Amino acid sequence: MDKLLISGGRSLEGSLRASGAKNSALPILASSILLKDKMTIRNIPHLNDITTMIELLSSMGAEMTVDENMDLEINSSNLENPLARYELVKTMRASILVLGPLLSRYHEAEVALPGGCAIGSRPVNLHIDCMRQLGAEIDIVDGYIKAKAKDGLKGGNINFSNVTVTGTENAIMAGVLAKGTTTISNAAKEPEVVDLVACLRKMGAKIFGEGTDRIEINGVNALEPCDYSVMADRIEIGTYLTAVTMTKGNVSIKCSLPSVLETILDKLKIAGANIQIDEEGINLEMDKIPNPVNISTAPFPLFPTDMQAQFIALNSISKGKSKVIENVFENRFMHVQELIRMGGNIRLEGNTAYIEGNTKGLIAAPVMATDLRASASLVLAGLVAKGQTKVDRIYHIDRGYERIEEKLNLLGANIERVSE
Ligand code: EPZ
Image 1 (tube, rainbow, N blue to C red):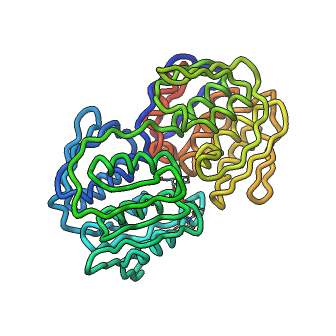
Image 2 (cartoon, rainbow, N blue to C red):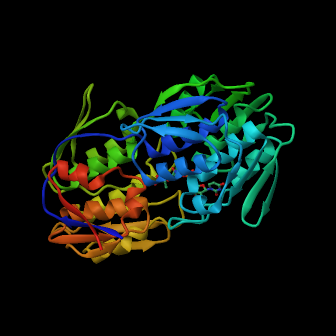
């Protein structure tokens, strides 16, 4: 099992190019099911979750070729097996994203119920309710969602009781080939939902209102092939900007989407970072111990839950007290115990973490990754800790960060990947 050995205490300096967004590439890959032809998807990140989605689509009969840039040509015209097996779904919950497209195109689907994960029970009831709303008959048998819509899906009014990102994406993909109009109320406004809609619109889908809490879809008979490039990964960018802030360095990150990073950049400015935006992307400089930053996570456009762990790491070395409230997932503080082992002064009360910054900094220790963003926060802590931090179970990191040690070493970090 791979581990990362991180020798802390070095400032990060230089420039980085962001990878494609995992949480945009996954629904866009699933949307290929809707096409009776091939499509090209570009700027896909090299991540384990992407590999799992590619394996899943292949297992259903999709044919694909990947070139050296990880640009993918995928042809689902011969896809004939609308079954998402548990062996694949259990490794990546986002496999649930094939439910909507399979029902929309094949009028049937058999998708293993994704289990929970470290950050929560992660139910999919909202996905199932929404498909029923569009005319599907759904039974849960032997841990599988067995769905049928013998006359195809019919447009309907979906009102999500709480905001769900992949639920919204599933609903959109179900609606694009449904008969009639589908409206989605309380829709997720995440940029990755907007990116999926941009791709579907390029395929000829009739969708309105993306990025707002009400989306309308007029079903069409068929979609057309398209060539689409996935947006940059705002959480990857936010993670590296936080790393540079913590190590008092400076970085330029080439990306064209500062607007979707607004809440993250605002919080880094409160921490004391000097941030400039230009046509190339984002430049950040930091030359002092960070100020404490209070965080309360919520759906977009508010502060993203996927950046919560990274900011607890930053607050652990800040010069004061801070409070971090996790409002989206019920168990997303698995990193806290590990940060405490590194000298973090953190107290948990329900969904709130109270942090007292330790300006003497953190101390290296062997720590264990538990989920994707928790792992990232341990890497950030290792970058500033005195000594060599060993992060175990880093397969969690490889699910969401492309070559993390290479990118950070390019900025002057000293990280070694070892297999033990
Ligand atoms: C997406 O997960 C992201 N994953 C997550 O990123 C992200 O943390 C999350 O949205 C919130 O922004 C992908 O896009 C592949 P939700 P998703 O449905 O869609 C509850 C990462 O680190 N809920 O918006 O699964 C749910 O339990 C990952 O890249 C139901 O109760 O999240 C949670 O409390 C982690 N029933 C809340 O809603 C449902 O049917 C929000 O979940 C669905 C969700």
